[in-house]
Length: 290
Image 1: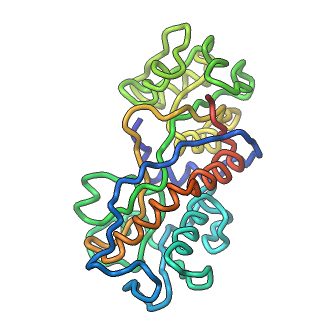
Image 2 (image 1 turned 180 degrees about the horizontal axis):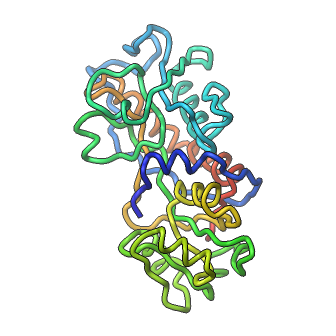
């Protein structure tokens, strides 16, 4: 399924229930950028042409919602995207006190023109259309498909894909959510297909299906703000072409190569996986279903 609208994604984290769970092993985003610094320069703090010499200015929205941030305070390093931002800064040679946060509306961040930040992190999906206006770093997060169910459902406590085989599942037609059901879960009964997620949510609330498959940001929103007696059962393995989040930079920024190199290094080292496990799976309660 395509990523929900910006508004929905932001709302998705508004009241995300924080439940400590363990056992997640999310996939690492695949490095895609070459990471070649612009102009043959080196990726050191002293050589990077940031907006303020010796400082790294990072943008995000206001408010910045959980579980991507914590307490609307990006400076505390808590929440997945705050932690990722500080990990990138450290990789580039910037100490925590060298990082300066600035608040930028989501739409303004991806609009054409000069930016007020060195890079911005705010669940930006990498798209060809947006690439016409801004640069993107290598991806730091692959959007995952997720099963949600009413807390009273027979699958609310499912811990594996096998636990879902006898469940009646549903998803929006023509989406990777539906593919996740047919290709990964492979339930014994035909999955239910809906024209819209609104129809699917009604079916879940009416007990016509045991579980609904949506992407993780949408799952956070549904369970926190729309169907509060529902819960995230867990994330399923990657299926289809994943939607990916990347950092936004000025179009043609001299920093893009170095920032992508930092993201790639963190990906190869497993750091992004560990941060995803900590802030999305364990803290936000979206465990892995294998």
